Image (tube, rainbow, N blue to C red; front, top):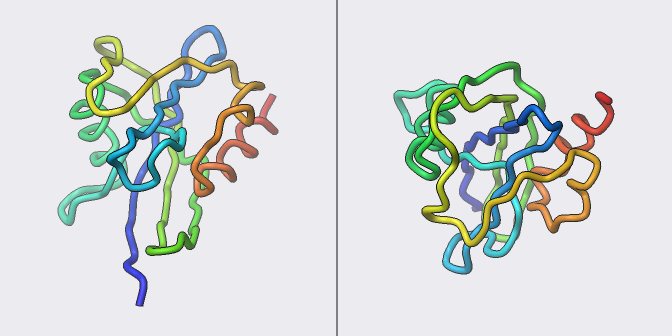
Length: 131
């Protein structure tokens, strides 16, 4: 039986209509995929609390979590992931590269040019349809 994993991702937009994306490093599960940054929800956390904690731990900046964008369940080869994505904005600091291979601000209309993890794709389609 496959393990179920519940994770959150932040769709962080700047004032230039660019979205913050992170490339998973070769040692991570789903290595070398781009993603909306985030991580696992701990037992005592809400999705919003988990997202704030993960962004602080992985990128050393504070975010304000906004509305939910998408709630996706995707079955990978070894596990099933539930990914909740939320809009967010940086309220303190600038993202620092700590755990990922690369981070970049990507114009919204160019998101699909990156090799995103499959669970992130429905959220991309949703935000592309907004504008």
